[in-house]
Length: 266
Image (cartoon, rainbow, N blue to C red; front, side, top):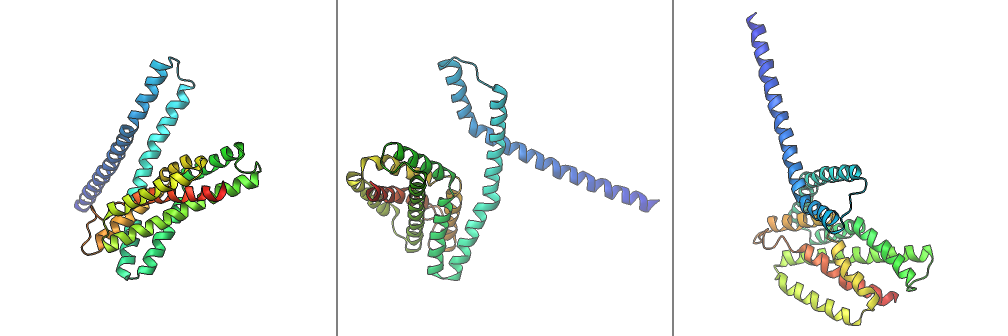
């Protein structure tokens, strides 16, 4: 009888611990959903204000809009969680392992491939490249055939991806060598201004936008993790002052390369 009582107490305590653990997980999920909602509140306020005060029309299909916002909130929460438990740790771990290996060549190859592969897969870049091919075709800048439009869009994506890969390599070398960030950034923007003078007018706006679409959902987490991971493991480097800045290069070089791409096409 005593053994039975002990077993019941043990099971009861175990059940209580499980309930506390699940309660903690639920509260953590609710907290993260609240943070995602707080991030979206400015967008919601702007949409509601203009629809209600400026346009003065009721929301079409209000049920679908609310359902869509709920999906966005959950998706944003899951995306941020995925970055924290997946992309950031793997980026830092690979940077740490390659730095410890002591092979500069493999580190630079990894940096280039990381920048190239993440950029070529960016949904924002795919959308912009496709839209640019359609508009360029409508303006008569390229042939109005599907093959020509696809070739132009893919060429644009490859150009931007190559430039980002090269930018990450330069950024990694900056971390390794301790080069001042502002020298490289100022020099890069001088080149951008010079390219703006000689590049075809039709490509300039697209080139500047290309610098923005490369710093999106896939590229930023991995590249940031790479920079912080390298600066953490390399002696004499600070993750705060040396680990960041790779994204600046990833935004800068595509502008130069896309304008050069325009010189080739137009």
